[in-house]
Picture 1 (cartoon, rainbow, N blue to C red):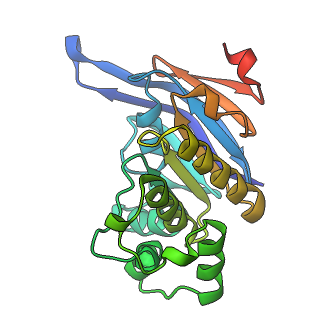
Picture 2: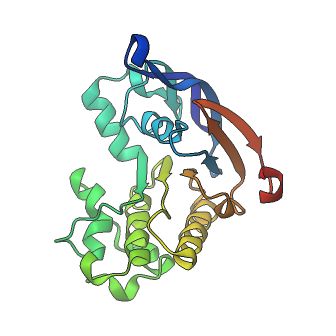
Picture 3: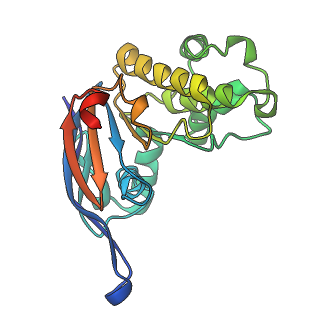
Length: 231
């Protein structure tokens, strides 16, 4: 079942001599439950691509469809609601609300949508993330790895069609980085969650189903490959 379809996506900044083509005719699709990684150097266009897919930025041309719905044919208000309900985000900087507990931070996207969390589902997510004994802690009382686990829980709670992870291990040490990748892999397998992650660390792509590379705004699909083949 196709969840995401990106067609001929282009993003251009500036004009004339200062014109920068950040994305050049990018096309690919993802199936339900697929865990894919996009690798690329800093400035290659991978973050721009993720922002366009997540409707945080508007492409210059091209289409992004999620579960058959074209994001950029929607009115802005409808697109905002669709994004909140169907796309989960995991950022490098965690972006937790410091005054809210672990449990409240995870439930936050539902509260924004005037919905209540199912207690059983919330407890399951806390258990899977190893946060059951931290549910009433504030972010300032957690390690960096624990804070990123909360961010993953926040992305999972709405059962989104797609989770976009933007360098989710960028602020973590090697062990916590691997723990985060393991949790994302588990979410993909356990919940059939579709996940698209960008990273510059090729060592973290061993568990993903598929790897794509962005270089100078051009995407190349490398398929399911080992790290040896990437070098």
